[in-house]
Length: 107
Image 1 (tube, rainbow, N blue to C red):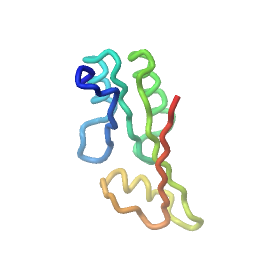
Image 2: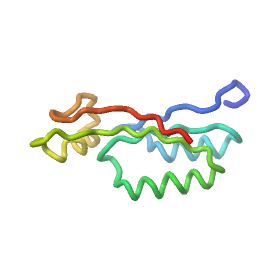
Image 3: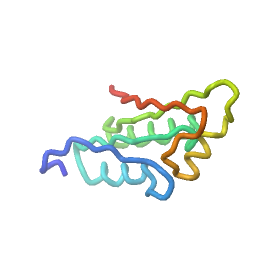
Image 4: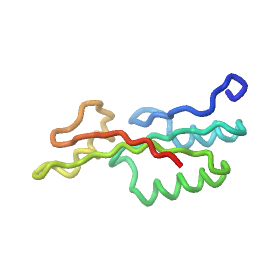
């Protein structure tokens, strides 16, 4: 990958796909400078669990892990579990009351 000019790549997340952190770990273990960009969706992970897993992988790779966080804001009166339902079903359609915005987190 590095020999072909790849500095990194976005590893998507969703129901029915391989685990993003596992794929990132495998790619990082086989490269020296590749920076996996891990996507995370709201409701798919508990924040503390994801932070711990991502920090561990980042430590093991010498600081090469990047995170793409997708945030969801809830409108008043909407169901709190909408984001979790989207994660479980893998639906690309946004549940009612959810506005999504992608944020690239950079060092």
